[in-house]
Image 1 (cartoon, rainbow, N blue to C red):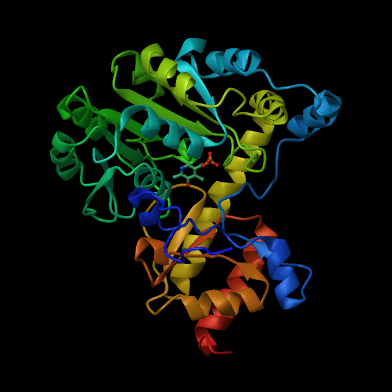
Image 2 (cartoon, protein in one colour):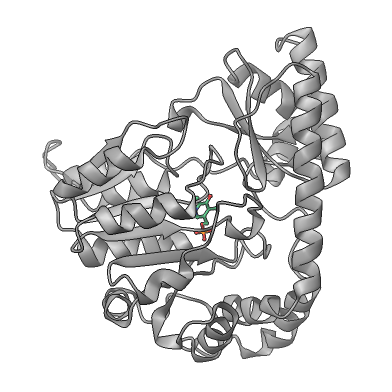
Length: 372
Ligand SMILES: *Cc1c(COP(=O)(O)O)cnc(C)c1O
């Protein structure tokens, strides 16, 4: 066969501009590469206590239902969620992780060439979904590592949609309720404002508030939540968006009919009923985060002043050799090169035993120099 080497399917300019997402290294991969068996993964902000035992039991007893398609409308889970967050079920859309919802929002509201606003250092999924859809990415410079809401408001004059992660990953920065209310009042009403609250449950800051309850007032507000973080269900993929019914209807039109799998819905519904697990997870996070900050400070390392279930530590030198030396000691953390933060590492708050491992390894590799 004679094939012209130049004749190839041409991906869209958007697809070509995507910088592929780099996930945290899986434990199994680390263990294969380094021949160790007791690795610790603190790289993906997963719940170190695992899923709720109630959710695990529910999934086990639903296994026999796998031959059936899932409920396309998520009737039961939406009713349960509606009760939980005090909104009507027709204000909720389920997604295969909140990541899918970001994609659906862009698909439903942004045409190629139209603007999407997000901040420097914002969660990288915003850039991936926007670029993939050939949107024009309007990235505003950060202020103290977080959102410069004035700059973002100005940028929305040329945009269809704005993403704010509150709090943000990887910086842990958050936007206070008053500032966010002012922002909502100033943004043109035809611009969709997407507030990603993946870490909302972890936040103790007094000026913070979830804006789920504001959805009734703002037809252009969408709030996303996830079961991947405090609920410990990252592996089954379940997120949800809260918005007015008109927005929900659009998302439901552009999603695939069975975007959320049955086990995910079963697990999530059960997890909502296990407040003990949630409280244990919160407690572990509060103590572990305070310990990480204190011990890193005692070793002379500053962390970004944020919130969430992770800390972002300034290594003061290129973080890659430190990351690699930690890997050799069986500890996986996250480098932040995709964010142009080459000196920082992001470390998930683990169990006390996992933090022992990280802190011991970190002290060794940063005292001796990362070559060792
Ligand atoms: C982890 C994370 C999410 C969750 O994504 P899922 O697709 O729901 O697993 C969303 N936003 C931010 C900022 C995150 O760090």
